[in-house]
Length: 357
Image 1: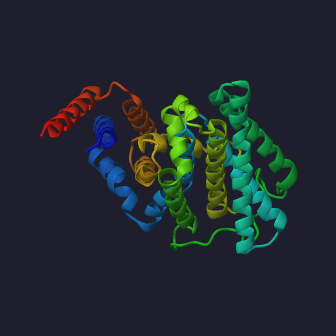
Image 2 (image 1 turned 135 degrees about the horizontal axis):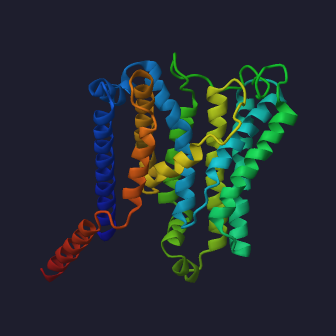
Image 3 (image 1 turned 180 degrees about the vertical axis):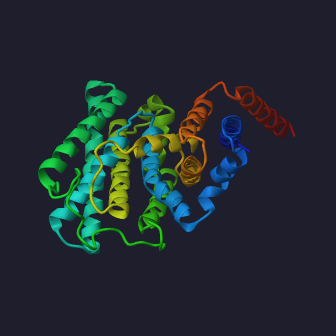
């Protein structure tokens, strides 16, 4: 076992223990505040699998956050903290709806144009704060955070003055043309072909980040930027590429969400999928291959908490406490640091013993 495998094993142990502690905390909270703790626990743990509709809710939440988590993995792997994913999801959904409505017809060509258009526009937008960081040394986190709200208000303006249907009693776009939405895969749910796109995105990102030279260079920049520069890597271009790909994936997530689950574009605020993507990427250790498992776990506890809230007397805000505890323990360098040190010492001793033999 090499040092990289030791670090990966420690991260797995750390994440599993963090999940265990957070779930124990949730169970204790349910038992203390609920008048029917057993029914609440059953709804929380078994509810997502109690019917096809509820299982569909789990998968439906999984799809968009899978895209945003992959985008976060690419951006954070290069050592940069951009949170543009939230605005990109919103704007990607809007652009996909705008293209579908303006084309006014259905079919695979319209679906493809809407998805690609949304993804490319959001990829280009995500490069703006990264460019400001590289050229003017602007704070990437602040710039990307502010750009989220620029995209929100810009998108709201486009919705109101370009595609709003004034004949209905709510702020929403015209209905998406028949045939422009994604086909349903599982009846009695809203699981569409977007699930296949999410799986394909995971596979492609894993191959890109782990099997290509560009992916290796991105990870090297994240590990040691100075060494990457001295090695001749074009750090600026790699940073811009990572921002583009991160925005592209998040924009695609917003597009498949609107085309897969909505008849009109009706978001009047940021949907939250970008923040969920960062949460999932953190749990996954910012490794694309771990994203599906982390996304399914978050989708599972979100769905369970929602069912518990509707059928029992436990508020769904419990999930916020679970997520916060998870992030605190996973991101904390001090959590299980002694165990990490022991694993490293044992690894060094075993290597020394083998070399003597």
